[in-house]
Length: 179
Ligand code: HEC
Image 1 (spheres, rainbow, N blue to C red):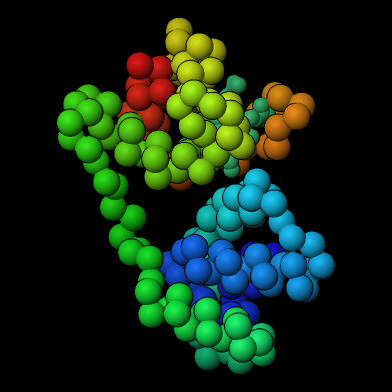
Image 2 (image 1 turned 90 degrees about the vertical axis):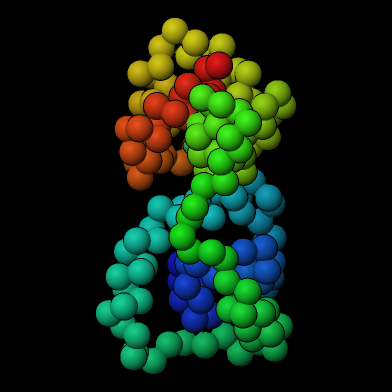
């Protein structure tokens, strides 16, 4: 759904930023007559990240195909603004070297996980402190969960998986979580 909307607005995944999110919230509220709460929006977003590779391919194949445009002044304005301020596509990690051996893990965590997890409080998912408690003696199980999460807590949504992270990244991540 999100992919479709971005597609209609002629936006690339790299255009995804707060501006676009705002626009999409508007889009959903108008066209689906419901306003997603932040949790749903985050989940929708991650759903989208998962499919972004296919979308790139789709884009390069169908560049010349006529696209359906959404004719709303607000959309046009916001999507123009978003295009003029593209998010850096290089996906470079912001590593804070002062964190020493946990620096890389912390950077990966803040890129992929902080949308839903905080250090000590429940956000969309449980805090890092709780993860550390569960997996302190089982790093392998932690890595398995991140790659392909199960469904555990009844009152929480499903966590999206991160199969795109390399073994090395997952190891850095779990080292940071468990520390
Ligand atoms: C879109 C939101 C979201 C993102 C992003 C997210 N998580 Fe989660 N995470 C959740 C939710 C929701 C749960 C609780 C799921 C459940 O209990 O069924 C959870 C649970 C967990 C758990 C607890 C597993 C257990 O056995 O109880 C760990 C560990 C975890 N996440 C790690 C991560 C890591 C590491 C990342 C980043 C690579 C990440 N999560 C990104 C939403 C997210």
